[in-house]
Length: 255
Image (cartoon, rainbow, N blue to C red; front, side):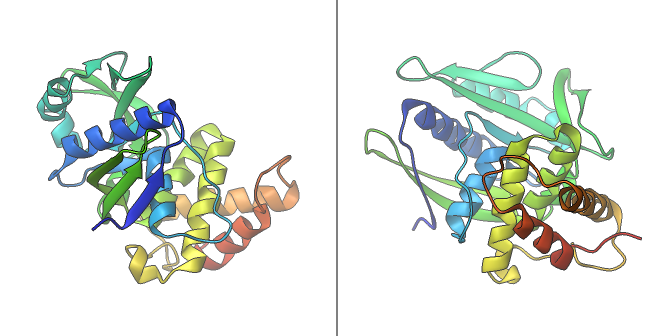
C-alpha cells in the first residue's frame, strides 16, 4: 500500500520520476544507499505533508552509494542493463518518450566538508560530505506517481531520514549557496515542526556537544541563520524567519 503520492504534470516530470523508479530498482537491497537530492526532498514532503512546504521539481535522480559499492561494477552493470549509458563523470542517461532524457547521477561519501570528485573502480564520482552519516538512518517509502498520461507508477525506494536530508542540504548550501537548497531546507524544517521526530527517523542535531558531521552541519546552519538575520535574503519564496527559528530551536550551536 503506497504511503507517498506524487503527481507528474509534464513529459519532463515523467522522465524524472521514471529515472527515480529505475534508480530505486538499482539500489534495492543495497546497504547505506538511497535517493538523495531534489527527489529525496519531494518524496519526504509528500510522505510528511506540512504547512508551508514549497513544491520544487528536479529533472534527474540522484543516488548516494557507499564507496565499497562504487568500487565494484554492480551499480554500473544494473544501470547498463536498464538501457542507460554513462556520460561525463558519474551521470548515466537513456532516451525517454517525447524526446525526453532520463538522467541518473551517483554520488559517494567523503570525510571532507566540500564537494569534490574521486575515482573509484575506474569511474569518477562526485563525493559529498555527510553522505555516509545521512544514509546510516534511512526511511523506506512505498511510492505512487500519477504520470501525465494518468498511468500509475509504483515502486519502493529508500531515502535518508529527515535529519539526514537536512544534513545533506546544509552541506549543499555551504558549497554552492543555491536558492534551491535554501528552499529545500525550509521545506524539510516544516516537516520537523509538523510531525513527531520519531516518525521522521530520529533527531540528533540538538545533541550537546555536537560531534563530527552534525557539528559541521550545526555550524553551517547557524551561520546561515546569522547571515539571514543580518541581511534578509532578497525575493525569497518562503518565510525565511521560519527557517531561522527552526535552526535556533532544533539545532545545537557548536561552541
